[in-house]
Image (cartoon, rainbow, N blue to C red; front, side, top):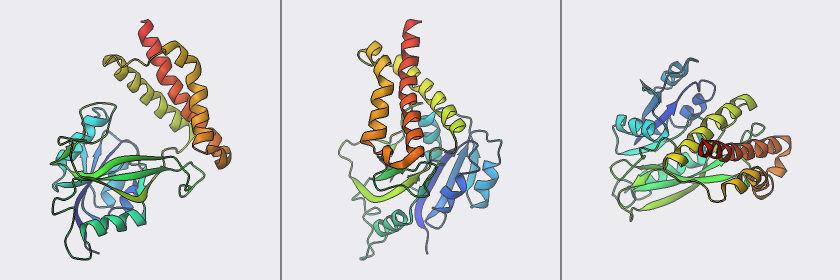
Length: 264
């Protein structure tokens, strides 16, 4: 199949065990793949290169600035951002082909009728090769024109911002598979690092949660209920229980670190 005029960009560090799946899902779709590596020691750049990716070293600057740097390396106006733990489903790859090459030979994407596409990112727990239909799903613009939307400079927040509030955004319904957890050790290290960044961002912007002391005592339990019951992790066995506890602790850690900063 012909490759589309899309640049895929991925930020990564020590993702050798996962980035191959990400790159495999897009190498026949996009005509350019950019991997911005922030200092891997496990061979991530070498793995990326075997898939034809252009690998660029760039010291870590935070989520927004790192993705903004990666955007700037892309030669196409249309860019697709994936994380190194995400895989484009075959159905989604087909949908992307359709919007760039519809049956009339006229692409809605290329004629300017659309500025970006929102993707559905569906979580997988370690025991799942594919996400369940009820799996927690986030929606985010990941396929977009970089002349219309860009990632912000925030070190924590990494949602594409569009200069025009009336930008034309459509949704593609087939999912991206999100394999965020490899093992408990990796999950705990990630939640510890990210909750620290979130807490620092809240304090620097003075976005302190209301009723902070009450949240300190209730955050873990409400987050666990949200994940285990409302998001149906209860149906995923032991992996679902572990996932809910990990999620709840990450939410608690964020609040606890804000409380600790405020005391100081």
